[in-house]
Image 1 (cartoon, helix red, strand yellow):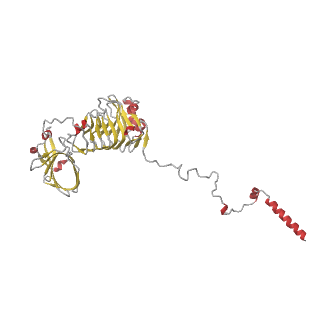
Image 2 (tube, one colour):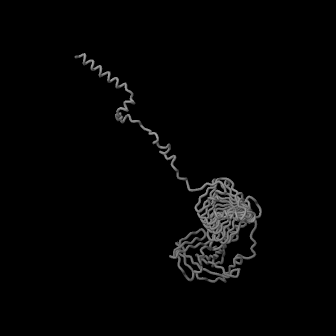
Image 3 (cartoon, helix red, strand yellow):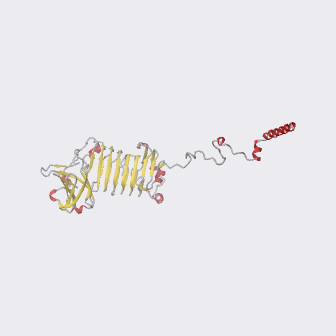
Length: 436
C-alpha cells in the first residue's frame, strides 16, 4: 500500500514538471493571464498609432500667435502692395529706389491700370518721371527695420517728384527712415508732401534734398509732430507750411544745409513750435527773426544777415491802435489760435514784441482758447496752461482763473490790402497784449 502511494506521488510530480515545461505563449492562448500586480505595471505603455505627436505636450508644434500684427517687406512692390488702412509695415534694412519700380509704369495708361487695382496707392507723372501718392489711408505705419535710420533708405530719382505724397490721410506714422533724392540741383519736388492730412507723427527720420523743401504741408493740414529727426540739404528750405489748421511741433530736431529756413504762412488756426531744436547758420538767419513761431530751449548758429526793415513793425503789420473798431465777440467765428504781436504797459507806454526782431529772451506768444458752452474752458498762453471760467461782458469776454482775471475784446481795422484784419486785445493785470 505504501508503494502504491509512493508511485502515485511520483506521477503527480512528473505531471507538474511537464506542465511547467509548456511555452508561456501557448499558456496565454489557453487561458487569460492573471491581472498583474500594481507594483509590476510598467511606468508607461506605448500603443502603436496612438502616441502623441512629438512636442504636442509643450505646444511646440501648435500654431503660435504672432509677436505683433506688423507686416515685414523687403521690396518697393511689397511695400506698396501692403499699403492699407491700419497697416503696420516694417521695411527691412536696405536701399529702396522707387524709380526702379516706377519704370514699369512709364505712361498714363499703365498708371491707370495700377490705380484701378490699388485704391490707396496712386501713380502720377511729373516733368522728369513719376511719383507715388498714398491717398485716403488712415492708421498707416511705416517703420524702418533698424533703429538707425541710415540703414533703411527710400529714394527717388526724378527731381520734380516728391519721395512720397500723402493726400487726405490721418494717423500716419513714419519712423527710422532716411528719405531723399538721388540727384542734386534745382527741382520742384519735396521730400515729403502732405495735403489735407491730420495727426502725422514722424520719429527718428532723416530727410534730405535735393527736395525744394524737406516737409511740405498744405490745405488744412494739422497735427504734425516731428521728433528726433533731421531735415538737411534741401534746395530751398526745411519746411513749407501753408493754409494749415492745427499744431506743428518739432522736438529735438536738427535743421542744416538748406537754402534758407523755409516758409510758414501763419494764421489763427495753426501753431508752429520748436522745442530743443538746433539750427545751423543759414537756418538761424531765417528762423531767428521769424515772427509767428515759438522757440523753446533751441540752439542757434551765427546770424549771417539781419532783416532789412524799412518800415516799423507796426507799419509792416498794418497795426494802428487809433483805427481799431470793437466787434461783438460772437464774430470770432471759431478762431481759437492767436499770435502775439505786442505787449504794452499802458502807463509808461513801454512796448515789447514777443518773438520779433530776434528777441530770444521771450518766445513768440501764442494764445489758444478752448471754451465750452457751459462757461468752463481752457487757455494756453505761451507756456502757461490755465483752466478758466468765462462769461460775456461789455461786448467782450471775462475769463476768471484761480489766480487772476483776464479781459478780452475782439477788434478789427483796415489792413494793408484794402480789407479788414481782426485783432484780439487782452487785458491782463497792468499789461495790454495784442494778438493777430
